[in-house]
Image 1 (cartoon, each protein chain N blue to C red):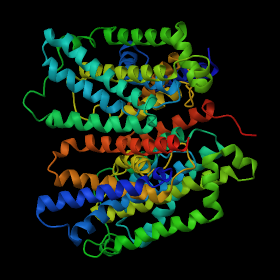
Image 2 (cartoon, one colour):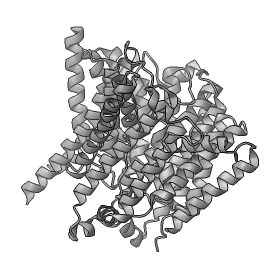
Image 3 (cartoon, one colour):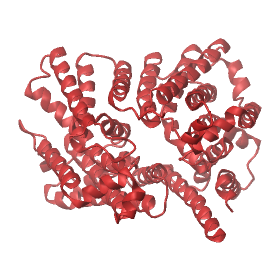
Image 4 (cartoon, each protein chain N blue to C red):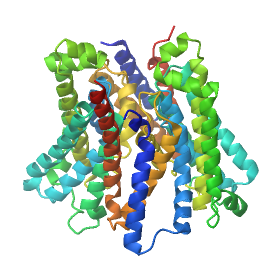
Length: 308
Length: 308
């Protein structure tokens, strides 16, 4: 295991223990369950963000890919259980398609990742707001179909199993497949990877497509959790996904890191916020402490090598 | 043809201005008057200033996400205190200080710019909420009359000052060093450029520009909001991109970014007068961003083909 990933897991453990000491009920299963559920949303978006960061890219289109998928789901699902498979397919398809376009723009047209994904974010925001008419139309305000909401019921909610599945998928993909080796090779040195026969462009396109898919998945789960889709649903997840990836020990320059660290990073971020909420720290204090915690973690294991 | 990328900002601005003129005249039956130009000037000034600061950072190969937080914090203080001249000086100094903190962490802490400024974004936004928990506040009428007078184009003077500042800066040793650090940090270091000091300074300047933008923002809107800065993060990056400043650093100019900022503001007016549903606004802004960059890279590609 990568040294940074070990740090990330250690930090998550420390924050969780600190939470248990500071606020009673945090250590109980209902308390932990709540943290895990909220962390799973960050975990989904961060999975996609990590995949593109591994090849030195970045995905700024996550907020509105997520939001668009959520709206597609509710407007095609109409709250009916028998329409759910279709709605799910359309929502995930929309996310994958947005990611595919991102990937093609970055890899084949040579548009910088920041520009391509920022542009995609704007395009999807405009499309979502325009087509849904700002959710003021009659058939927009549908609730999530019941099976989706049931994912969050029970002592061990099925949503957490979905997260576990996603974690296994990403981990197996990155560590046990040729594709995974190619991802790390591309991230470490794209030129060397290209010269040794890695289809760098294809790998890049695949990763952006997956990131779109994961953002859509997060949107779907958020709809199930909240029971409804809202506009601006994805906005908090832009910077949160980047923070989770980095707190999880993934190098922002690419080539290093894995999903175990990112899971730890997501838990750390959500646990910090939850503990501060439980301590009744006002919002301004939460924001400031959140930023300072990230900064402290960066100083601990997110520094770049010295120039000599 | 190679200069086309460098002049991208001006070309895009010229095209957008032409479109604005045409759309305005056809929809209202008369060409835009002095009132319209003044309104554009006053609404675009904050973005112009933030984009100016952002471009300095991007020229060194960095990025400043904390502009959102600095603008919010400075808007909050200006509005809460009514913006008496003494407070304005204090606000501008505070902005520079916030930027300097970013610069010190990036340069001496060796933490990637995107991560440093992501963390401080949260800290500064929190501080803004602490100063101004609910939107409100005011601005001294005299300050408004000097900065963004609704009847006299006082903004032009300040815009000229900012442009002149860049012209002087670019010709100083510091200006040269900014480009040197951005084009090749290792080489710059080797020839004795104090890379750390240059980096710390550009972030401080970016903070200063954001603070000035905040004062203009309050002068134009006559009230403050602790979340006022958030939109500037992505729009300032978009301005820099449309202005032809390369994300790899060392290429482009702050004037391009200023042109990009004006063009981005004009696009909204073009859409308005073309009768396009405002809900679709960000769709066109996103397309505008990607297409502008594609034109730039396309031109560069064409130039390389012709040279070969």
